[in-house]
Amino acid sequence: GEDVEQSLFLSVREGDSSVINCTYTDSSSTYLYWYKQEPGAGLQLLTYIFSNMDMKQDQRLTVLLNKKDKHLSLRIADTQTGDSAIYFCAETRRSSASKIIFGSGTRLSIRP
Amino acid sequence: EAQVTQNPRYLITVTGKKLTVTCSQNMNHEYMSWYRQDPGLGLRQIYYSMNVEVTDKGDVPEGYKVSRKEKRNFPLILESPSPNQTSLYFCASSLGQPTDTQYFGPGTRLTVL
Image (tube, rainbow over the protein chains, first blue to last red):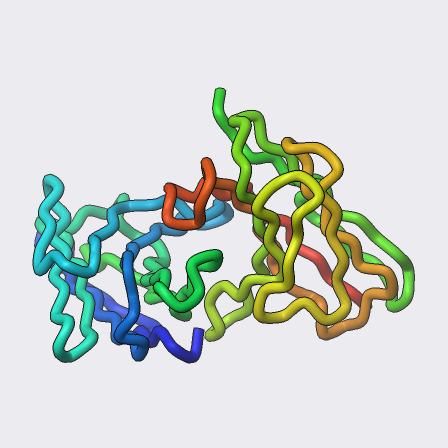
């Protein structure tokens, strides 16, 4: 995960918006992903964005991509207790199309 | 139900005792891979397979072997486990490319004493 970086923890109040950030280093990134890992489970793909897009919205989720700064964010609107999980940013690259590179994950906890 | 299964889910073993973690998918996926998850390091790819009899090293292949004799199965073999292989292991599969949606198994927690 050294090429994809995320902060390890985020705490938000229930009902607020959560913003999870990710930075990557390789300019040849093709797809960028957000995966969710609930306790005791494997990862589930939440959403993804192609590198020629700036934004993607899917219900409560908004993904923003700033290619110039190599910065990806995931905004969760109206955060609920069920959103408690670890969120992984990941990328695939044109230079290495057969693998996905994951960040270290951000643990999101929800305060009442 | 479309799924990726792994066995065992939990395993405690001792240094040097060979073990195999099985992975099976029922979606006719071509691409399969193994990851290990360690605190603060995220997921690191161990090995991947693009199809039957086609496997390649990921980022951390040392100490591991894999085989892909059938499309549905992709076992991970630790010939001589060591304590630094204590980790949480995930198998994943996708239709044809890693850019396709990856489906993850539930994980295998391995402890090597």
